[in-house]
Image (tube, rainbow, N blue to C red):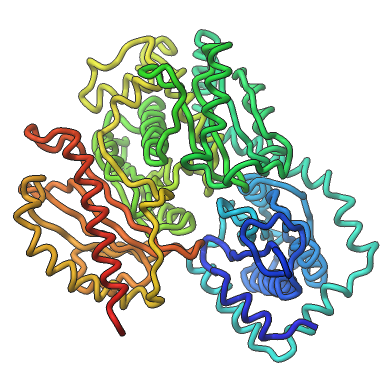
Length: 634
């Protein structure tokens, strides 16, 4: 029997947050956890932890159920990591002891969430368990939990589940109880679940396919076919090709190929076998190079191929590569660029459908309020874009669950929130979806490329709408490309979240203490540098904390940011926000992230080179101050 000490030792190395419960599951040499391991085996301690997590979530679901929901059903799926199967083998028998289970095998995160949403019922309490570590290295794995609302548990429910889990582990007999449950089910009962995988997968795929259509074309039945027809007409006149490097992810067995092909897009892909993970999982930097190479190859053969995407292992995130006309090469977009393009497209969607009347938020009987929900290190580029459309911007702490929860709160307050997301991570969430999805990102940009001025006699195309509202009508042309759209983005330089220069190793475990020390250092440094910073048009600053969905402005005690995000927002002499530096410890990886965001061409006497240097200088300054705070003795 595995001991409690062994389980505690494993748990101490795991990260439990609203974004999921993650750790290194892969076993390397001498059965030591190895984040690059491709082993399918997990330790006995990991088995107990997964079984206990399943048991506690089933109990949590029971407590969330309505009186009429006597039946409890948990949907189960995995990404393509090697250890997924072993985790499933620990989870299924435990779940069967307390509720019904349907297992769809390899699924994407958006797919299992759409599946759960489709099965929402007044008679059945629905939950899902998704086994994945998202963008983390291959030896990592973890568990995400959610309900029938189509997203992972919000921060409040995630905290409740975490507390229940810790309480369960305080029971003296929990190890023997979970071990008994894992081995108690008969082979026939277990096999019955596996024998129905194909049926469950087919049901999940249909639910996801149908839901994607609702998301992309809009919630209103009256407008859905109109906007789809407009894009399809544009596609007939201007063929568009898309490539994908699946990198062996869960999207290899999802709807992508069928979805894009049925719409009429040219489509080609590589690394399309489940588990064929040939490079780093996180779709950033070097991970996008194979897709760039594929796009260049296909574009040379067929010039319609101008766009590509690379998903992470669970398929909820996908960053883009594009054909750049200015260099005649393919290039990867920064995550912040991807989100900015998606926002422009979906804001323009609202204008095209008449929901948003050129920035005037009007309705016959009452004012409609529009908003976008983003995370704290999303570039201020989004604020500039939203301002042109008359859309309010609200920020939450890093974490998809936080942004989704904030958007739901805004809707309860009367706002329309069509798009939300984490600009620092790329991709977007388009309502009514509650999870990022590369299909939605790609089609947002496709709508912008294909719905032009010739699609409707009384409507401007998406790109023309954006050019008009942003005062850049001279940049519009009928034969525009993605390169032309990118040239109209508000110009910012932002530290990529997954670049080496954005990651620090911090010894201080209590981040409130770290931020308290940092505050004193920043005060000292500001006095030294404030005159020098004026030549960059920086005259004042404001500290802001982000904890969950709460934003605290004019923060007096930096320590009040706790483990959340802390931003120092810089302003010019007119009080205009023009740059920031930011910090936060990751909730899904054992790293501490820093970033800087700088508005380019802020003053006529500055060159873009000076602006680029300012981003580097601010980031280096931030690093120096944090490392000094971390090195201060306790």
